[in-house]
Length: 387
Image (cartoon, rainbow, N blue to C red; front, side, top):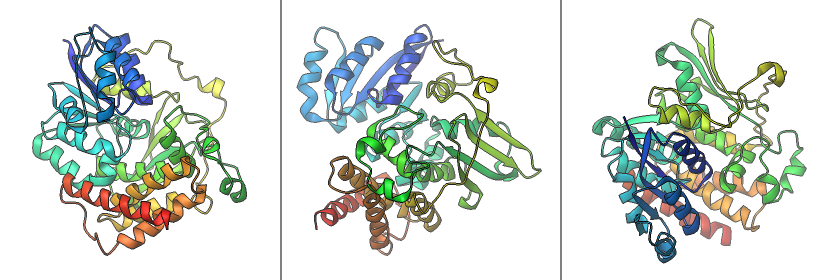
């Protein structure tokens, strides 16, 4: 049976890996829609390569360029947020939600409200509106497949087990480019240095979140919602080899873990297979003898305060994760632009969380409220940086 797949975030690192697998297994899949952010040429290439039926670009100004790049292909296309929503809601057996940041929230939730099966790589959907998102998934009968490597590994490690039997659930972090660097060296880091991830090839923003360990904080919040598990049973360890992606410690002391080479095609293939295993051409199998050793260490929350801030936001609940994510996106963009230093990211995020704690004491009731809070925090954060 041929499955119809739509890919939101088709031009990003996860989107490109997804496209590679769809291309390898053309006999199993057809592509209903692809969506991207601003790069019309890259989106058109993906749409043509996959013979997509529809292509949507989020930036309205890029619409003419997309139309020109797709001229003669027969691929329908559109531009702007409404076009991305159309891509998310076209008929599909599986929607890959890989848009980076809060921008992915609205289209992902639109797919959820149609009861789609969603392979979720947009962690911000759960960070910004986790309660509402999971409530919608249950109400509309949507199925959520974790596509982040850590959460996919955890889902496989849990198997048919019960969450009530889990003593601790652990996600791993590579430690990023500054794992062993002193605080003074980290404070002076440039955006290029922060984005030089030692293991994974990801987008600029995600790489910097990995360098600050904010990415692990976001993933803790994601795991809390995906697996309905309390913060007290969630943990992070630094694992430089990036072979073990997630561990589940059971109440009887047994441990199950998800291991694989650091290749996003592994969790993507698991989601695309919908219960069947897909082969991965050009993939490197895991050889533990060649790897030699696997090491683990506790994260240093003094040198990496973003992880501490994210844990506090998860523990506080309410809209604190929503606030934290919005402030972080503004701060990271300012760091990339060279307007603030690396540790200024954590400083702004912490200020925002403190400023909005009383203003938004409860979790967003729905996606629309989450986006409203996100917009207000972004405005405040931008003004705070300019002051």
